[in-house]
Length: 57
Image (cartoon, rainbow, N blue to C red; front, top):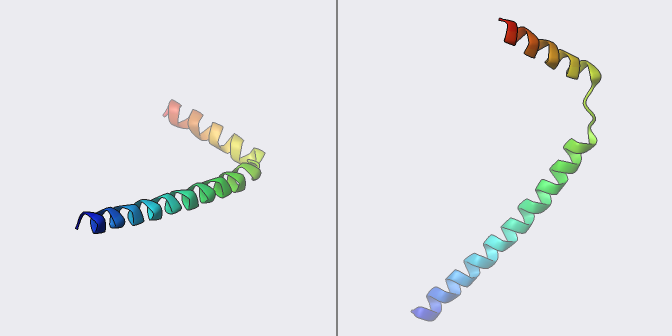
C-alpha cells in the first residue's frame, strides 16, 4: 500500500509540474500579447478626464 500511495503521489506531482509549466507558458504568451498592444492616446486622455471628473464629483 505504501508503494501504491507513493506512486500515486509521484504521478500527481508530475501532473502538477506539467500543468505549472503550461500555465507559465500561457502567462508568457499573454504578457507578450498585452505588452505588444500599445495604448491609444485617446484612451489615455479619456481615462485621465474620467479620473479628474470622479475626483471633483
